[in-house]
Length: 326
Image (cartoon, rainbow, N blue to C red; front, side, top):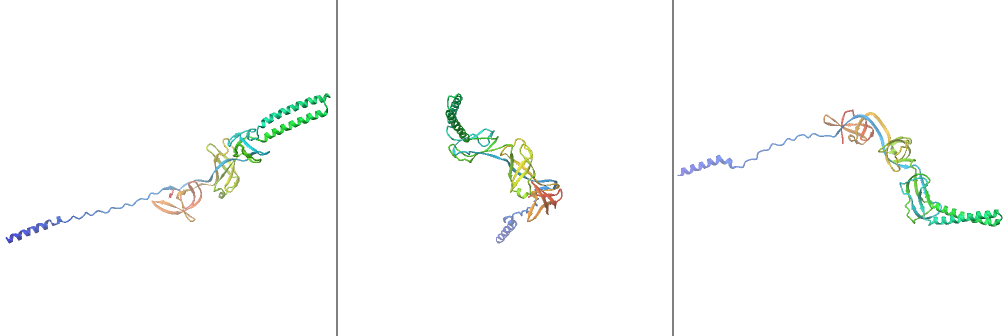
């Protein structure tokens, strides 16, 4: 009996040893670490080429009048009546521009004209009777004075009316009119209307590069618009303000129209050109990064004139080399 117990115990121990490993928790499988691939660097590039470069200033300029003709009332102060024109109107010589309010002067003129004509008939009849010896020299002189008085009063009324109206004495375009309303008091000498002549136009424009560009009076330029191109020249420089006069004024230009004036500053032919976005500057040093066999190498360059997107390369690069853009 005792032997059987011992044997059974040994059998249990043997079974436990043989199956013991299955009772322990399994270990996690070890993962293989990922292999990192090197990223290739992509650059925006441009190629150094040979070409021509023209440095210019593109000046936005406006057609303006070389001379302005102004109109004002000069005889007396009076309330304003009305304008007969407005800015931009085309007028001819004799056209009405503006008027003062002086009441119904036309009625006064008509009445006085009748008085004058009556005095003229009376004088003529008195003169005939004087020549016939019917009336005295006194009667003739009295009729003459009455006629002169009537004529003077008529002329004064006509002058009064004339001084109350502004009339164009040439053809042109109305540039401005003063901001008067009916009833506003107008003083003598105030400029009421400004007129310009369309065949006497100049161009004026301003650019911050003008003063430092070194351009001189007489410099030839090109005047461009959407439909035509004409030559011109610089007639005056004041700081950054330039006055341009056309040498061959064609039709189609209008007062106030904006055009582009191309002013040449410098040029170079058959030179190396590099894109301005490839240039880096540190202090007084200019350099680019040249892409050689996939490697970016820094290169100092000497630059010349620039225009638009390109610089002239004096030294440091060769035709066909590839440069990295910013």
